[in-house]
Image (tube, rainbow, N blue to C red; front, side, top):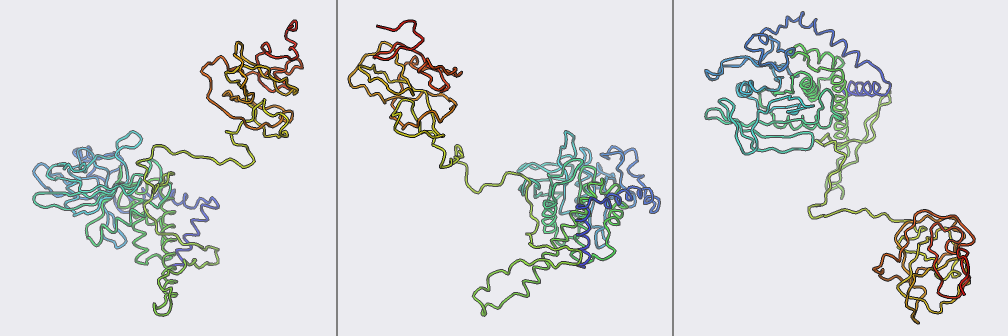
Length: 512
């Protein structure tokens, strides 16, 4: 059987890799076979077309075949009708393993629970949401948490509701009729887009594993429904049938998904409704086969490498994961994967840390060592000749402290000038290096012309805002202005100097 599984996997891989249309052409054949199926097997839909039953159909073109439809038994005088839009589907063993039905309507919810009770259904799979793209796809036929709901003679309570993840919600329902109460497991698959297919099959495969655990050896059928009860419902039934064939090792040379889908359509109209759904069945089955081969290979290797505890100190160490044997077709698997689990497709990983007490999260970026820290400023008027010029110098506009200057030494450097606000008191203790930078961003131009200066001390800013000059537009470099030597990129206010120096050229006449 392993040879057939490997051939199927390689076929699906080649279809995706080479862009062949073999799978799509098969679905075209299936669509053309609908009329032949009805004619060959004498399929009719008379019960669904009866006047009293028409209003019980969600879609007028999806009616159950009379030959396989589910027939209800009368329960109370009020509910005597035997019709519900549902069909039995045979499984791998040939028995009535599944019931495929539409999503209940408001007027068919009681009939839905009549069917569940009559055929002793213990697991329900719902492959749709209640609303999709603004349209109602299914009536809510279960009860809210801790509040029972009554549907005709049935009382339904939600005992437990646990969202496994973003894809599946698992509910445990208690259904009471007369004096008897039964437990029903409800699996709702939430990640199937309307008119589309799931991105990955892991969620469905994991859900089906949980469904088989809940179903166990119960002889009752598995109830599967979506909105119409044909497209998504057919996909789930097809995947589960293949899984049963795989577990019973009945996959042989005659295995064909096309024949399987045709058999489903003979029992339920339009099962596996679109080409995309048909391709999804192929890819999901290929993933199932790959997982099965990996588990078998790992099991064989584990048995071969098993050592008695008395012979080794490492008897409790698991053997390494083996690779699958490769055939002439070039297929080989190097690493084994864990069995598919229910996992969301969210791009946001779950954090293990408790964030309840966190107010904010700040990302701090470490700067390269060659870039000076932003808190280190080079001031324009400190120790001009103390350091060499570097290309990474930063320059800031400066502001004098609220102290006047008396007998300030004449500057012999042409690098930077100091402008002083008028009407300042002079003090002998004047510290010429005590300046503060003015907030603002200035772009450095031709940094090689300016020496690198050490950082001076900083004190609190003065309360007067008139001491600051906020200029955004640079001025052109002129030889007459000592406030912008070399075109530093910002303007200065030219004021009357307080000490002996050469007067600026802006003055009409020098001061005497």
